Amino acid sequence: MDVFDKAVGDEDILSHLGPLAVLAGRWEGDSGIDVALGRNGPVQTAYREQMLFEPVGPVVNGPQLLYGLRYATTAWPSGCDEPFHEEVGYWLWDASAGLVMRCFIVPRGVAINAGGEASAAATAFSMQATLASNTFGILSNPFLDKAFRTVCYDLSIEVHDDASFSYHEDTQLQIHGQDVIFHHTDQNRLQRAA
Image 1 (cartoon, one colour):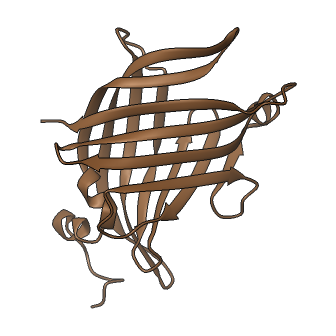
Image 2 (cartoon, rainbow, N blue to C red):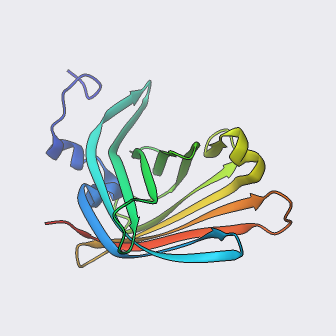
């Protein structure tokens, strides 16, 4: 029986996740800052967030072998019970290519497949996606593509020694009728949940 056929337990999967292994589990953070476009310009919103990462794999694409994390995240404005953002998707590790990938959708009608190079032992890495790329790209519903076109997505991750990780996201938007790209940013530091 080879690696393409065998059943893999969670512990074995973790050993194949490279820089993503440390993220497996549940995380919470309440120091998020979202900078989004409001009616009169940028609006800053503090938020709290929960993320869940569940190991999956192996995922076999012919000779390509991927391991990953199925994930879901929900974010709430500080002091509110109703979320203002949700995502579901996968974070993937391709050990032979040295690639981290994040494939996700948001219920606004946007799908992003981002990727970047990393070593198996990396504690910091980044992923990018650009509009019209055939590999690491962005798709939006017709309304968003016309009114708030996402042209670039950048994500940076850093794992810290205190059982936390932080991220910074920059979703670059071409707003209809405006020449300047708007940088919708999100950042937070999350701790492993007990």
